[in-house]
Amino acid sequence: MNLEEYTVVSSTGEYTRDVWYLPSEQKPRKICLFLDGEYYVNQMDAPAKLIALQREGLIPPVVCLFVSHLNGEARHDDYTCNERYSRFIAEDLIAWVRNRNSGIAANECLIGGLSLSGLQAAYTAIIAHEIFMFTLCQSGSLWWNKEWLKSFVQSCPTRGDKFWISVGDQETDSRVVHPPTDLVQAVDQISAVERFVEVLKLKERTEHYHLFQGGHDPVCWKDEFSAALQWLLGPLSDEE
Image 1: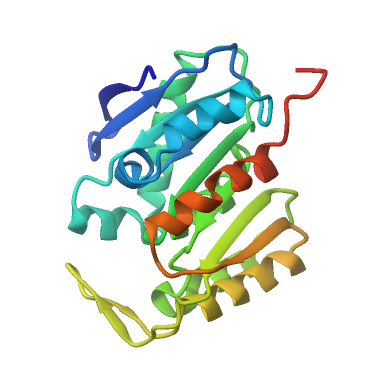
Image 2: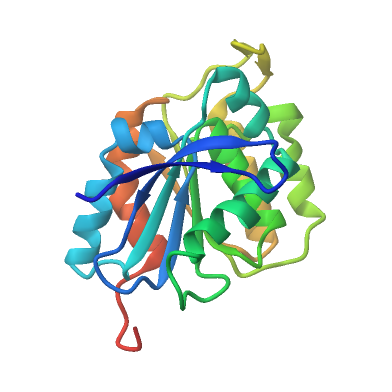
């Protein structure tokens, strides 16, 4: 597996992040960008799963970038509906990938994340809809800031984007404080996710809600990963 490691600096100089880059074995048709790269690479076997899906023709050829979260404090800042960080993703990181891969259509991009980075992935897809057509939100922390993203998306134009949104049937904790910055989770994960899904339905976005058996656990996210990518990206079509 040809997983390459780089460091990318934002055009503003604000962000310096390590990334893992997975080239496509064929001419890529889509870009997949995953936040919390440490989890996807080290705990969820995502690169190998992506290679297998492509070789079996279950998804089109894709080129992938897994972005490091750096550390706990940066993670809490980057992944709480941070518009500056979203610009870094949508402008700098996607441009970095495009410079290495020509011919990918402008909006043929997927963004994925889990837990807090699932929140940021959904936010980024909403504000950069011209780039990200596909969103993977695994146990997204949609409880953040009194479910702010739910209210935000209600004011956004209707789009035809695709969202895979999942949560575990054991994610029932509420009134939780999350270190290192003491983020307060007032409501349980399931309730916040389900309310967000209902708003997506009203906005006529294509969504797949997956309530899996388990808790807030990379093992569960790993188990659903291949099915989620197939639903979001679909098989290689005759035109491709």
